[in-house]
Amino acid sequence: MGPIKKFQVTFDCAEPERVARFWCEVLGYVVPPPPPGFASWDEFDRSLPAEHQGSAFACVDPTGEGPQLFFQRVREGKVVKNRVHLDVRVGTGLVGEERLAALQAERDRLVALGAKQVLLQRADGINESCIWMEDVEGNDFCLD
Image 1 (cartoon, rainbow, N blue to C red):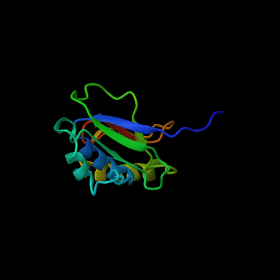
Image 2: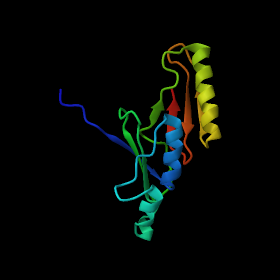
Image 3: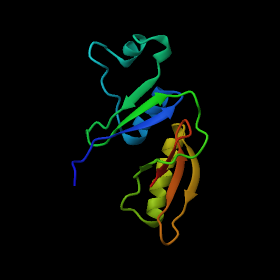
Image 4: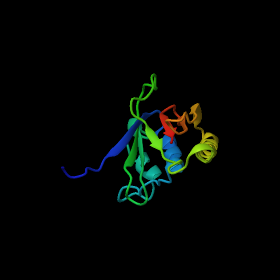
C-alpha cells in the first residue's frame, strides 16, 4: 500500500467567503492566517487585481487532521445534484430515535445558518436515518 495522501476538497461557488464561513460553522473549522506580509485576508484581497478580488477563500481543521476546504468563484450556478458530497457525521454510534433527534438538532442549527433540508430519510430496518441537506449555495451534503 502506498503512503496516505493529504487532500483538499474544493467547492465551486458564487461567494467563496460566505460559503467558507458557513462550512467553518458546520465543521468547527477556522480560517487560516493570511499570507505573510498581510494583516488580514481583506488586506490581501484588496492587493489583488479587481477581477480576482473575492475569488477564493479557504478553511482548515484547527487540529490539522481533516482536509482543507477551498472555495473558488465560478460564473455558472449549480444545475444538477452533486456527484460527490460530504457526509457530516453527527449521529455516529447513535441509533433509532436518539440518532434522529441528534440529526434533527443539527439540521435546525444549520438551517438557522442558511442551509436547507432536502429530504429526511428515516431508518428502514437496514439503514439508519440521515438528512439530505443543501448549504447556503445549494451544494448537497448529508447529516449522517
